[in-house]
Image (cartoon, rainbow, N blue to C red; front, side, top):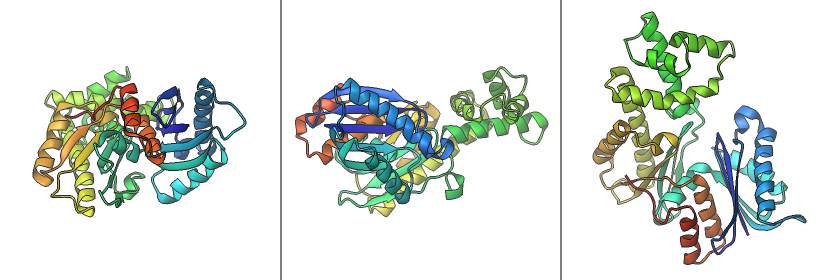
Length: 328
């Protein structure tokens, strides 16, 4: 038995499957946010989802009831954090063997044809990791602006609000973001949205909702929003090309997997800009946009650990409607 876990910011997906690729149960739980909510709350969200999944699969105490835990989690960005949550999940006694990693590696595994390549995830935040054909790994800390990161849905929402407020009060150029931000929240102005966040009337977490608003304004030809889209394309291509360079693969045919809510939405202006940059910086890269849920990658990595037969992979991908990676 394999217990696959994808712990994302907004949700936790759990799948229980056999080493033959048969999925016995799937469950969705709350988000895994140890930084924002604390480790205990984050682990409790995973524990609730895992318990329900095991019960749905007919697996009950005494535990451990599985052979493998394959857990790939957002906000577990550093090797020290992977070690910490490896200890925590091992202590839960769900399985005899435990693997814990960052969710970027699950995205990578879900998308590549082989077991190596590069993945860029742009969802609530942004991250990138790569695995070479020799097993060499290249990655970033990716814990926010303090480690040089820019972009992702949360940051794009903040930028949309920031530019909207400055357009209203004259500190910045005019932009349709001001009216679009206000309209999204049913407010009189972008400033009212900012004040609503300050006074706790609007959750700051809702700023991520402005990411698609920004792309819509950019698609209408707005210069300010358009520059933000171009900046996001710069960041996606910079992350991937740096990893390709570190792995010695910049001039090799390599699959580059794009995923997360911002990239999976396939906003035309963003995707065109990303493709233009790769054509110039890494012309041999093959861009793939993954539509399959990240828990598929966690489950595939669980099959890898179990040395599963080839038909198990086909069976698992068929269950998730993803026999082959989605492509642009």
